[in-house]
Image (tube, rainbow, N blue to C red; front, side, top):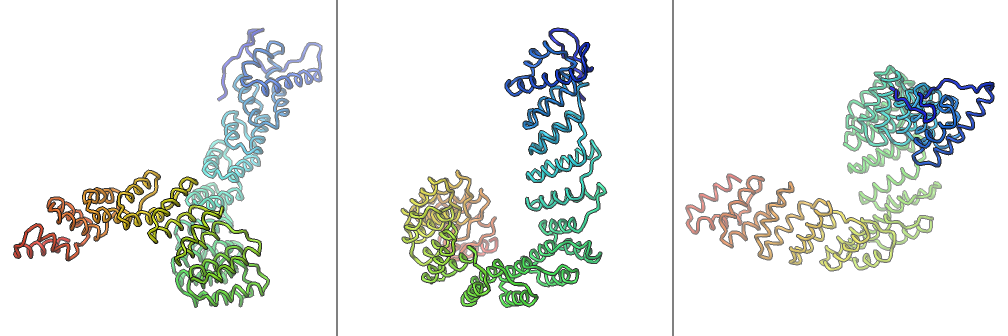
Length: 586
């Protein structure tokens, strides 16, 4: 409700009124000119004064009748002059409405709402609706919702749909619902898409083929593949007009292929053809990728051949999918043959195509061919980037040329955290811990956060070098930087302290590993038990054994005999009895 507060003029000491004021002997034209003059002064004041509300009352109301000061025509004129600043217009409108309920002009408030929507101020537009009680047109409300969706404010759009429905009985048109569902999917939130769909249906808006397709894609994203298949099958039976586009079918095919549900994938492909939605290049790409991931090279080749047989001309991504799969399966010659075929059919490889081959030949050890392809990529107009650099560094480290990788790291500006991770791991694998730690510190100073793989390599390297304390310090640093250590990193530190005879630190890190939710491997338990037995610390031995049994870890045979000898001495009868008990319990 609008405020009923009475604002009193300092001159007349009477309530402000919005009754039209016509000067004695004046005319409507004279009144219009006076209102225009007042509006001009108001605009100047609200632009120049940070806290103009009090200033307006003191300055203008002492010189003009309040009936003109709060006249709806004056409000409209101020808003017209302030059209380029919708937020300030909203502030002025709210002040006028709160100062004089009869000054509220629904048309003017709706105009402010439209200006705020056009300016992309969704939150302020919602405030205008709630505070001024204006009723914008259905077209304006639809545009408002579209602006929210375009800005990625999907939750706000959902709340606005609920509010507008309850207050104005407004139901968005179908294109707005479809845009909301599609945007939710792009955001990666299928459950939000479900929410929009259910509200659309409950509002009595009949969906179309696009709506069903978006629903099917949301079901796929949520892992509900059987429901998606059932939905698409039902839509196909209803006729071509109700059948979603190829994208929905392709999404289902891709998800089924990833789960290696090939018979169901084949059924969907047949459904697509029968429904008049034949597979397109994107569908075939998804199938080819999935078949290679499943190791079904022959089937991938067959699909590629079928694609051509159906009259499709494979594009660059499709060729790249084939080349990538063949490289990963070791079919180098066939991959190169396809690469050369691309040029013959007039297709220019993209940067990813080159990177696939360069990566393959670096890892294979064929540096000459890798370098030639890399140079060909540069000659084709693709500048080197961090992906290209990382590909080369990984190949160098894999084949023992870590020094060359380090040199390349320092002279190349296009590096990222993966670049540092590769070099750190390469140096650590070679036992060059001083250099590895130097690269690590350089990464941190450059603002990069090495991954847990790089930390793990440093931890293992320090432990192998007999420096478990340095490894433990790195583990502490990981935790401080919010990087979760790998379970095997804890195992390395536990065994590392045992190897240097510091079993107390080993026990401490065993406790930390378990507290962090990890299950140390049997070798770590065995090593602790051996050290504790050697030190005659029977009570600690029993604590470790109890933890080991709780985690369903088995004692090694040699460790088991050592444990029983420690507990029972050389009494063979007791030794055999304890061995049987421990082996049974474990």
